[in-house]
Amino acid sequence: MQTVFAASTDRSSLSNLVRGAVLALLGSALLAVSAKVQVIWPVPMTMQTLVVLLMGAHGGSRLAGATVLAYLVEGASGLPVFSTGAGLAFMAGPTGGYIAGFLVSALLAGYAFERGYAPTILGALAVFIVADSVIIGLGFAWLSVLFGAEKALAVGVLPFLLPEALKIALAVASVPVAQAFFARKARAE
Image 1: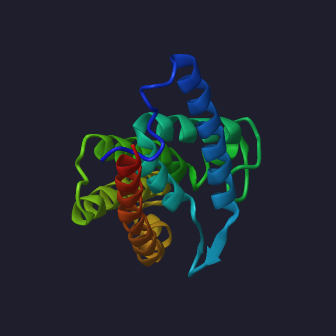
Image 2: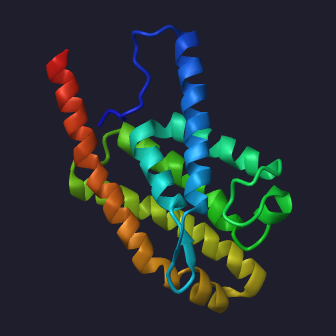
């Protein structure tokens, strides 16, 4: 499936570079806003994982990777883009594994959609489950280092299973919308 923001081949390479840079900065701003949107579930959760999944699926691996990388650099440099902190010390704290998982997840989802591994709703569901599991898995692994596996599972995985399932469902619902967009675009050309 072609991604929504895939660079057109009819533009110059400089134009594509500028377009990509602008989209990556806008995407990192969207990711920062999604970090501030907190829904109180048993623990506070943000909408970052949904945005990361959507960026991968609809932006492709290069744009999604550049976007998340820009977000990480912004956060590491002290800009308040994360949910409750900033800087390298914050990134090494309890949420560090999840934050690192954003980059891997965006690249993975983008790659899978670019290569056509999600041609159906079920394929998209599988890709989103795997990509989201990367975020949760890296978060769990880092929390396990800091606090032990039992506590990491209890506070860093289990409370997030239902909310993550809902975010995955929203991401899956975006796929037919993107497919309809491309069908309309193809008919117009």
